[in-house]
Image 1 (cartoon, one colour):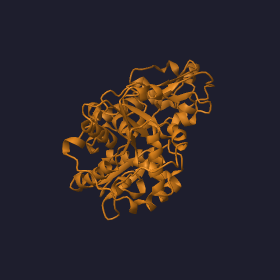
Image 2 (spheres, rainbow, N blue to C red):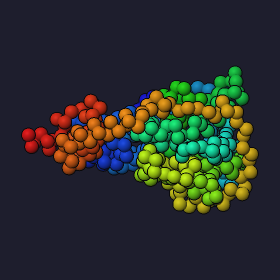
Image 3 (tube, helix red, strand yellow):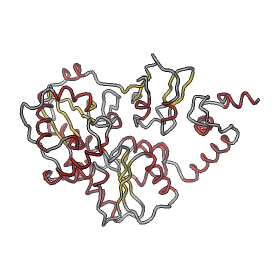
Image 4 (cartoon, rainbow, N blue to C red):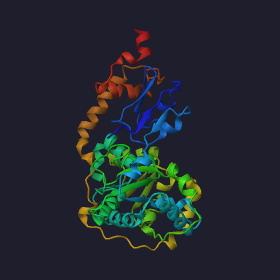
Length: 388
């Protein structure tokens, strides 16, 4: 897959704000150039937001070319978009506007999300360990890279948007269709062939909703397109609505809180919980960076419309949703993980631990990790060189 975030470099001042903001220490500045280690990047978009000079960008689709490639174009819209509207009828108006803009059909997949929501509750009910559910590519990538011992805790479900795209391929078999996923966050932009090259995806193109909003907004008010939403699909998207207080189920949002929970699970310090839903964004998917309204009000707006969301969940066959994500390839034993920690800590003891950032890494631990993996050596540490 192509790197998600690319560096423009025209007006970079080497302020290291991107380096300091990166939650996985995937960014370094070498010879005045921002270098993003895609093996460590989890596509959280934090660095892009921190760059005051707009030198970091997300790759985009050439829309004009994309629309001309296919006989029939379909837009997949996320359930979270409902939180941006005051009334349910506004969604119908918006869907009509989407169709007016080069799309032949608009499809939502809350019925699939609703089914997987119920499936997660059921599959975790009799589990002997804490189970995790997340349809956030950013969080799943975090688990793959930093918590490989917890891979078996992650429920093996495919992404709802991928399932929806696959079902459309079956429905229109023999027809040249182009499937466009309108995304509320950067993580979901990675689930498509274009612009990032995930060639095994059922989705052809991924676009940010905010990029498309001006085109759709100009076409609003001309009509309404019928659209139904599944209530459980909404619950799977909003952290405050996930689960039931009577069940041993909880939701956690934000990278710092998620790390805390994952640390507790890794060291077997979290008891009496059967299922945890993990969300990178505040309030869940309704906090996606590409949605135009704020999640504080969105939480109340979307809950007020739940009673109008009576679409049934779809009946999914096991082979439609079951998918062991590729995190398995990086699985480590607990013993191997502890050996890695000891190696990094031993190198860290030889560094000044000022966390000044002059080496181009976020802190001394980040440099120690790169030294331990053989990517660099300690000559990058200016403080250590000066002492010598």
